[in-house]
Image (cartoon, rainbow, N blue to C red; front, side, top):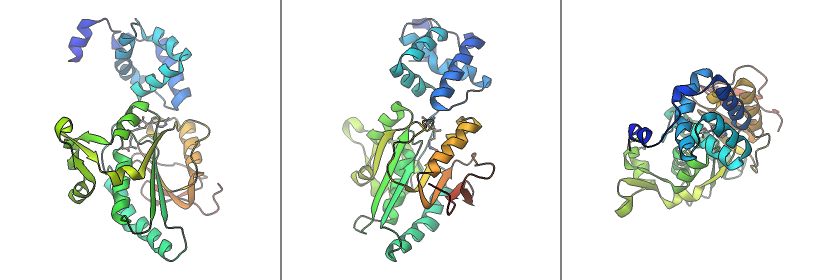
Length: 294
Ligand SMILES: C[S@@+](CC[C@H](N)C(=O)[O-])C[C@H]1O[C@@H](n2cnc3c(N)ncnc32)[C@H](O)[C@@H]1O
């Protein structure tokens, strides 16, 4: 159904129709809940994304929707699902995967074989969207530490949005996305859908075994995540946060890195300033400084 047809069937608030007061109410709510800062330039975007939900609930205005969201936790979760931006793809920012393949994996393998570290690698995709990032990490891991090599592998994948987590757990994507995956990985790890799954591809069982999903809000004061990670990928999400939220998130993530573990940010993100307990080692890749606390 086209957006034009949807508009004709039922009344929807005009995107430009949000008052400054209504917008400020959502701005505060979204910031408090998710740490996401909606600048005034995002007004039309906010309206566009929430208009359909306002219609579904039979509400006339964004103001009355704000009242529902403020008193109803489930609706808050739904609202956050609507406003998050989930764009992602397999092997996004390929330089990061080269750093894993050429520097980190060989170093960890050598240390493991010399008995200087456990033969175990734990990675965390901390804003995993529809799963392309954690499954790319799983493919890279399985290539470097094949089954039977005696290494224990794990990818934790978390996101705020229940909608994208649901899709990520299904581990299926349109077949057009195969062009994002190197041919050897595609052949080794992905299954082509048939019958009702025609036109789709699915992660194979070895990949699915490695990745586990959980909802986690990076804006929460405590992350219910056990153990530490060799690398955390927190890419293309800090850009949505204001500076104090970003600093607090980085500090919490640092506490979940193994000594010498790595934090990967998106290409447009940086840590700005000193005192983060993290040192830059490659562009947008930071290592937990020795003695950087826990
Ligand atoms: C643009 S996608 C990035 C996906 C992937 N990391 C990548 O780089 O391709 C941003 C993701 O951050 C998630 N997100 C936004 N705010 C969040 C928060 N407070 N806690 C956890 N995830 C959040 C969104 O739901 C979305 O899936």
